[in-house]
Length: 218
Image (spheres, one colour):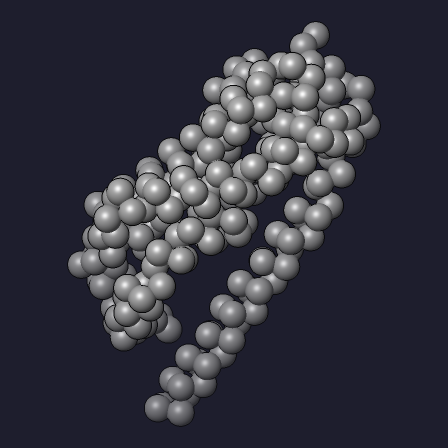
């Protein structure tokens, strides 16, 4: 039985089922490539817990399964790859299709898209860089960057830098904590819940305001 499989079997709070268990098995079988693949999929399926995968990769590095440098490079490469795919999808989707979506979607206006474009033109670089450090948001920011035709080199550099910083925090934490790598999870989970609540609150306020506007016009 390999190191990660032994971890899942012996540590009571190690992820051994569901998506987390699947990623442990992936890293167990594919090593660094598995870690990169698991982190990459976080871009497409936000429920995949990259904040668990990253410290687990750090723990594996501390046990000599692979090097710490290898873990940092692999997880960052996975993050960047997933982001670049979404960026490409946004680029192909384009502004014209986005405009049609806003025209046909209830509660949305073309002016909403125009304001978003103006905001992105002013703050897009910061949004891409810091967005890599925010759960859920990091899966979304790549698409508008592609739609707005941000320079691919700029997007690549900002995404790489933001991903490297964020991944390093969790991978190194897992590396230093060793067998207690899972102590990181409660903090990461709490942060993700705060982000989700903030997103829900913003959406709720938006819907409330837009519905009130429609009723007043009616």
